[in-house]
Image 1 (cartoon, one colour):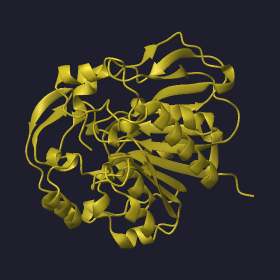
Image 2 (cartoon, rainbow, N blue to C red):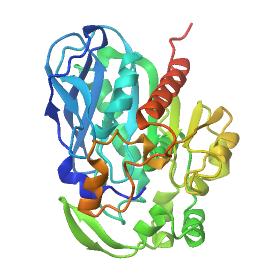
Image 3 (tube, rainbow, N blue to C red):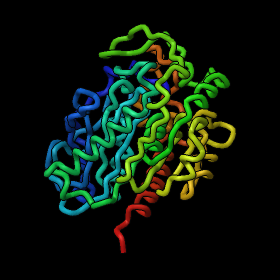
Image 4 (cartoon, one colour):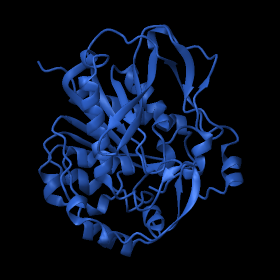
Length: 357
């Protein structure tokens, strides 16, 4: 959950000459979605099944990450497609999840997600990070906007909406499905595991605003607004959830998990000895009535990020980023693990969001 804030200036869209087969056309658009709760527009990326046309680009291409091919503003294909809302991790960007968006579009879904203000690369502070209710509101606002927008509503399959989240995005997705967090339990977690990424971040020192480093005070989790922190942010329109290394895993209220009626698919990146305690999800799966659990062997927490460029590791050293964003478990290429993850996630959503008989 530690923000990747130094990468703010490295992320951009770029054109490419690499061909994409017409039968596998992925369209992409960027939207500005008004958010009354935020008092600003949400920067949204939406991927969708398309017909040939538009400008060929690589979404999320940067000095650090490889982008995913798509066609900007390509014509939307005819049909009715289930919608997958996506929530990125703390300090990341939605554009860098193009690799999974492309796989889901190829499986017949529309995929959309915002850059969450206050927890996006270059716009991320410790005090904003625990405010998960703001992130859930972003997704609910986006869902409402798409279902009311004449350009999209007719393409969306009615009542077939899933949510996918990674790390703090996994926390967001869990809350959207009905899970609630115990403030005291989360504070105790950081008391017990002060070396975890999120707890180090809450210890203060720095944050990022407008791409610049700013000083930050320590966050006292016990002083967070208890009513807002523990309030239910369930959106009843969500019919399926996939949670990858969900953050705050040790702080969810068991009764709220036991009451979740939709399928919940938990995935941890790594094996039993390598998954950090802050995201271990096997117990969460056992508590949810329709939960299941899987691990991706050879992976680490950052495996869910886009593939790195050839010089990615050297760039991280150059900019002083301590997290090894380009390293995986050392036994399998990230592309192979992305393929496994993509197949599993697409299959879970295809099963849960299939048309009613």
